[in-house]
Amino acid sequence: MARICVSIVETTAGKALGAIKEADRVADLIELRTDYLSEPRLKPLMLGRKRPFVVACRPKEERGKYSGDEGKRFGILQEAVTLGAEYVDVEVRSARGPVKDLIKNKGRSRIILSFHDYRGTPSRKELTRLFDRMHRMGADIVKIVTLADSWEDNLSVLSLIPYARNRKQEILAFCMGEKGKMSRIFSPWMGGAWTYASLRKNRASAPGQLTVLEMKSVWEKLR
Image 1 (cartoon, one colour):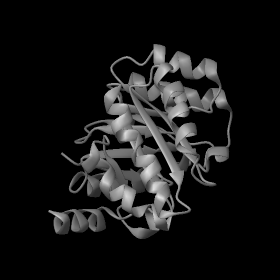
Image 2 (image 1 turned 90 degrees about the vertical axis):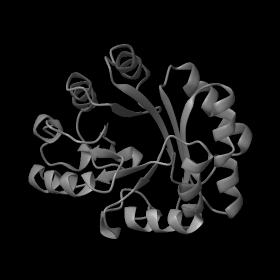
Image 3 (image 1 turned 60 degrees about the vertical axis):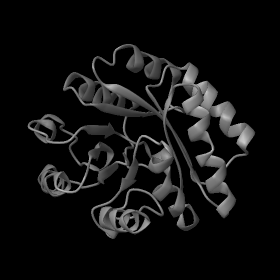
Image 4 (image 1 turned 90 degrees about the horizontal axis):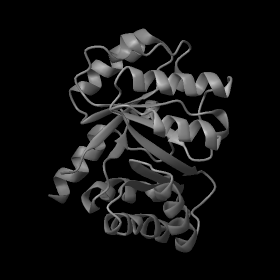
C-alpha cells in the first residue's frame, strides 16, 4: 500500500505543532525536520503523536538548515532514538564513527541512511555501488534521492527498488526537480517504503515535492 510522509519545516515549536496536527489528518507518516527549528526541542513535539515520526536534522552542506556543531546534531538524532522515534534519518556522508554509533544504539528506532545528490543523477552502476555500500553499513532503510536532469534519470533511480527487493532491503528511491515528479508519484507503487509530500507548496522541503493533496489526487486518477 502506497504511503505518504508529510515533511514539517516550521521554525518554531508552536507552528510545528500546528502543522503536525494538520498533517495527522492526511499523512501516513510525519517527517520532523529539526534543522528548521530555532530551538530543536523534540519532546513536546513527539509526545502524544498519532502518526509514526521520521526525525531528521539536515546540515547545510546537505541543503539543510543546521549549521551548528556535529556533536550536537548527532545528539539531537540520539535524543529522537531515546524518545522512541519510529525512524531516524542520517546522511551517509556524515562522519563514519557517529553514524555507526547511531546504528548500534538505535533502540527501537529504525535508521534511514540517506544520500541526496542535488547536482544530478549518477550512472546506474554508481547507484547500485552506492546502494551496496549503504546496505552493508546496516541501514534499516536505504534512501537514495537524486536530481533528475532527464526523464531517463527517473528510471535509473526507480530501478533500485527491485534491486533492493532482491536483497531484502527496504528502500526510498526517487528523484527531485520538475522532471523528477513522476518518480515521486510511482516510487511507492513499485515497492518504495513511502514518498514525501508537503502540506502546501510554500512548505516543500525539496525541489519538485508535490503537496499531499496533489499526490492523492494523482493516485486517485491512476486507480
